Amino acid sequence: MNLLDELRTHRLLAIVRGPDPAAALTAVLTLAESGVALVEVSLTSADALGVIRRARAALGPDYALGAGTVLSTDDARAAADAGAGFLVTPALAPSLAEAGRLGLPVLAGALTPTEVVQASSGGATAVKLFPASLGGPDYLGALRDPFPGTAFVPVGGVDADGARRYLDRGAVAVGVGSPLLGDAVRGGDPAALRERAAAFLAAVGQ
Image (cartoon, rainbow, N blue to C red):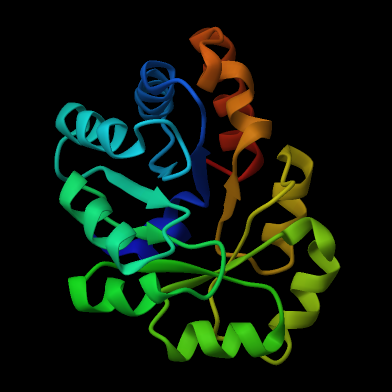
């Protein structure tokens, strides 16, 4: 899987994080059925590795399913063993180098210019601008001036309107958690999740 191509093509990464493994799995499958082409399951979720394994079995080998909040080398290995096709970190962490050893693409968290340089030089496929809400689209625009070749994916507080603004300022994609998932990760109505997914897909031009 070419993660950068997937991000550029689909422009929306859904972030599943929750306390109920069954609900999390249902949310992943509902998102996929709704046309959301990239999903990460945060390792802070209950039985996250089990959710990734079951989702991979249901969705097949080609679906862009990743693991999020991957911090340690052990996290990276466990996520890869569970079937994650890419890794996402909230910050610069040992998992970045381990992803390279495993041959997995990684979306590495960074906020400052120094961290952007470190993420890129460490082998990140793209930079997760996190938490994006601290600076908003204008901050992304400022970062794009010195780093025009860096693929940025803002994450943190991105709603449907914000998604459009970030993309207009040069983001290759946006990552969205609770504004998209809502109560689905706690057993909420999948139909409501499908409606939110449609709204976000429309917002990013899909």
